Image 1: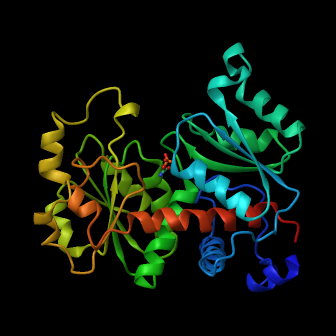
Image 2: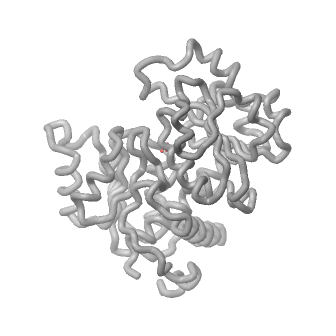
Image 3: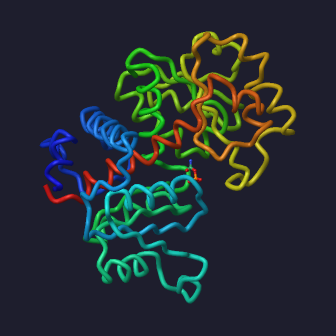
Length: 319
Ligand code: CP
């Protein structure tokens, strides 16, 4: 039975050797392409109406979220269930963390109950890496502070590839809160490896010139770069991570960096508008841009399920 599904997936890829997904920094272009290709097949299977593709029956995935989430947590849960796995949703707020138990002890106790993977989100960069060193099961980074959010980067890249047919040669601008954005880092690593030209654009308080060291173009002027861009990924201003406001007022930010109808008139006609979500309507973009014909925001969310199915299968299936 499962061999039919594996045939549809083109077999378990011989290049895949990894047990953890901690970031896109350490993945090769070949590994990223492998995940994208498998996710495209999972998406096709879902679109054919298959709601259960039982490749991970008997396995258990634990969502270990220490920060809030709508999209990532739900889509990892859905992805695991679509694959026939069991899902445990850990709630930090009601756990024994409040009694002083460490994150590593918490994770090791959950692992002792019999799980094949933990999907972890934490405000501290490096927590998924620490867990990977201390657990036998697979560890998937669902966002570690401002460091990386690899499955978000993958679903963003999948969406661009789906809608534009390629990544190589495209100009992709990441606009807004670059300093605090894990999505920015994962997008930069993934897009650069696949041959895109990446621009980071925003206020100087949120975009250090040192980003150039990662091989990206740095801009403080959205209006100047707009006509050159194929994709705009509009990143949320993460007020909750900032000790001080990085600009005098939201109105000033909107004036310089929000995507509006007026700015849309200055883009390439087939520009893609993307956002990792959650979006602040009226801050990163107006509602008519978010809901407009060039917006791929909900397609990104749809692709998140397929990407997470591919990641869970590659990391936890027994080939
Ligand atoms: N994009 C993203 O990570 O959304 P959530 O915080 O809702 O998971």
